Figure 1 (cartoon, helix red, strand yellow):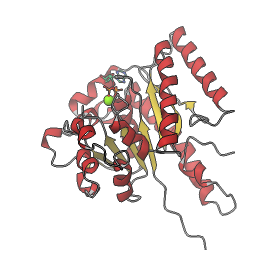
Figure 2: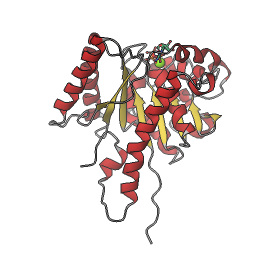
Figure 3: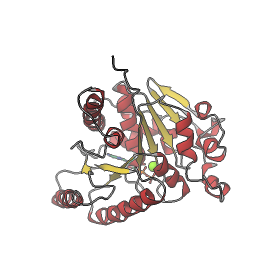
Length: 298
Ligand SMILES: Nc1ncnc2c1ncn2[C@@H]1O[C@H](COP(=O)(O)OP(=O)(O)OP(=O)(O)O)[C@@H](O)[C@H]1O
Ligand SMILES: [Mg+2]
């Protein structure tokens, strides 16, 4: 009889060097949606602003341990730095000390790989790990990209943001070559989206055209797509962090809850289909496809 294989972990970095585009809102509420769907989920707050931690009601000033400890001490017990938030949802929180980590890590030869090593020490405890990156391309973001298999880029559908995404993808390409050849861009999540604007629709069409063209090449965004649904602009999403609540706790009937739940459902549909193929004794699925959701089964 075939032995059931352990479920692999999807490690996804939410990354965009542009500030205020919806990285934290997406990490927190997509993570909450996955947890509500019964998937063990860890949110890693890699931003010294600690917005993801605060949004989940965790006060960084009261923490004994945080992601800072696992970055600075390669032998730190990662599990003891994690805070249980709610059913299926844990957080590796941030503190403002984290801003010093880039300097303190100095020239340590493994300085880009500390988070990856810490997540490896957790074993297969989580099905999803979502990493909220800061709005910069420093050592913290590099740790996020080195630890992840996938990148999801939250952005707004504006012309200038589109230009920025080209540069960002090039950066992911460089990081992929230098520190993490398995890194793939799963796609873009459109945040604060306004479907009624013609400009928005044009930008989305441009983005889809760009991804279509990339299918012929071998870039890490070869299989990227514009993930659906777009997240509509919804004031409830802006309000809930001040209550330390996810959108599902604060306003479960709001469009923001509907959109993030549907985004999670879409990701899970593809993921579960891949896992089912992996379990099947008659379908051989290459390892790269099983763990890199950016890659579509041929
Ligand atoms: N769909 C939305 N509708 C309305 N407001 C939103 C939406 N998504 C995010 N916001 C608000 O926009 C602001 C920026 O969002 P967020 O903090 O998620 O961006 P970020 O990319 O993480 O920012 P930073 O680069 O500073 O980390 C926040 O005040 C957030 O509450
Ligand atoms: Mg943020």
